[in-house]
Image (cartoon, rainbow, N blue to C red; front, side):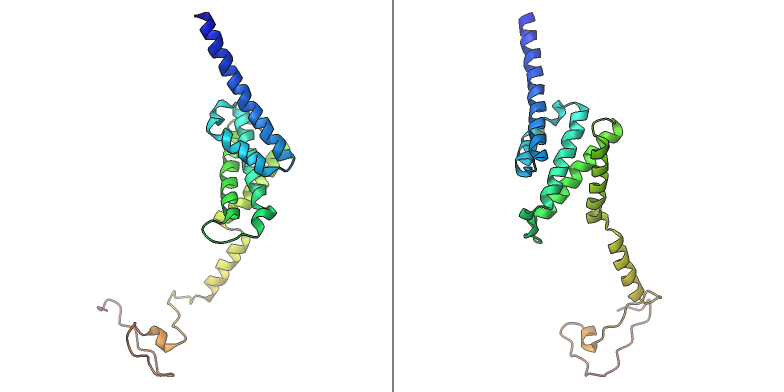
Length: 188
């Protein structure tokens, strides 16, 4: 019975070492700017991240997120934009997901990331969050749109009178006055 216990314990310890080794191999590829190879290892390791220590889980999430972040900015994705299968958008979405997980783990149990990694994590997440929440540029665009709206909130009449006509109705001649809107509360 003791022999069975030793075998089970030994194989469990060996399994953890394998996950740790996979993480270190992926990190070596990341450090060597071999992001495609790193991502392949991260994807293989993903189902087993619960076998890693909390610090290693923070490292995994950080490295996985930064790998996706760097792939989003690589020359491989720079020529392909838009559409349903936009690889740059997919990489940025995944990067935001994994970096947010790394930040949450680090906040809950500090010590898994170095100060440099924490700084890079914060800067990268700030950039990625602009995709979702927008940045100063989108705020400026919203202000410009609001400035164009009338103060009373009324809709601006179309420049072309024919644009106001319902489909199938004859168009008003050019220069004809616009019909008045029905009074509030009256049936349309």
